[in-house]
Length: 119
Image 1 (cartoon, rainbow, N blue to C red):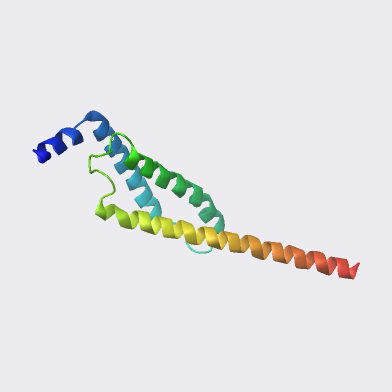
Image 2: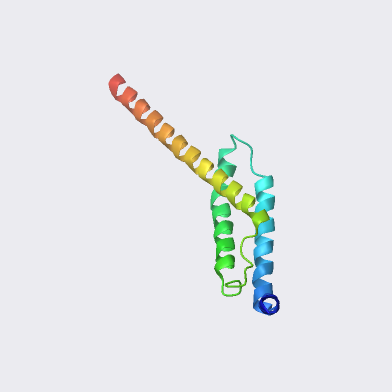
């Protein structure tokens, strides 16, 4: 009985459409993770962070959408590594970006201080 109910829910057009959107977004995210910029390519990394965050948000909204609620069509176990790797990469890049900003501020402050001493 529950298998029939699950089949009926998962075959609804809105569930199918939402699940297809989720799969497409996940495939795009997987491709981005595999082609992530190399270390030291800071401008590219900083451009990717918002894009990844947007895609992760879209995926989470897909999962929470009415079309998938209660249908057990959420994040599949094989999809979890993509979420984890993307989250970890974004987090690391954000920390590196914050560190670069702090180092730049310190450099500017030292230069300003040196200029004041010379003047």
